[in-house]
Image 1: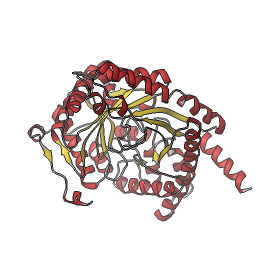
Image 2: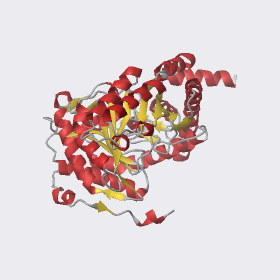
Image 3: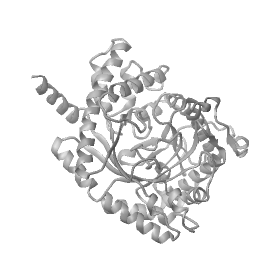
Image 4: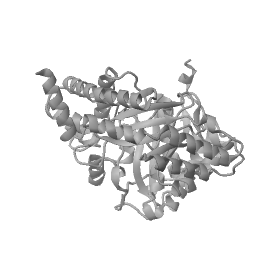
Length: 452
């Protein structure tokens, strides 16, 4: 009877509460694709991706059919391209982005991540060229995602990169102005980036990862909210226990899918990412979970505390159900991709300043936030610096995915469609940060970076 009830519960979670596996991501090392001839390097990259990932989508669909569990995305992450392309004498890396785009489309995945650079300590030749190539690369490809790691707790923050990326984001917004500056939605600026993160736009295959590996990212905000509806008015002890129990169940399903995918593809299992990732659909919102805690609207005082409890309980419940955990694990709080967050911004309850406070306790950072298109690049750089500082000081991953929507201002909306959703244009502080950003150099690592 117990097993029967568990089966019914799982069916209900899938059919009514939007439980899904958010992504199966194949990480592929391209370190053996370096070549002094850029054309030869790109041929090796294309051949390796299309060989290793040729069955990824097919296997994902077989698992969906076998267990009845939706797997929303099949994705690929690769070694940061700045590390591969700098062996060549190419003066820009746009053709590398086009090669990734072509290979990913050939195998039928949703996104490919790894047009990336790690510059926390400073630039190499390849890092400089990749960052300079970003606007054209992101505007001339469809499913290539990019990330740049500008800081770590050990290294501090590379403020030269922070300054450059403000300009890159503005230029990318302009080059994709006909599609609500969507190019910026494919770029994340990180501090303490995770090398095994299966979520876009920030996924890349770290240099310490094996040649090929399978990561799985779970989801399920609707399931958590439904569970909390049954303990309305109970203490936070009960709330925490309830989330832990449901996170355990969700993660067991993720581990099942990971085992199956790993076996069928004959690729080692990497990690389960214990993230609650929302979608723009009703009943699939992190904001609505936080409101279930007793907040009138997300953004009200108490929101940060509620998010901290949610994040912690998801990790505690999930970690017991998975063989290996990693990635970004926790609750994502993107604005455009969360129906409740969008509503809170429209009501005036949720501001960038409150979102920044929430990122101190969540798994990522300022995510999918649309701002006025005429926002200066120095302001964007300063927003990145603030968020990187939170990550650096608190020894956690933080990121910024911000979209200055060209030609739009307060009161407008940017419609991206699909999982990227709709973003109301949010107000930014209009006082200048230009002299601050123009200093350049590196913000030193904090004193606790001495820990070895």
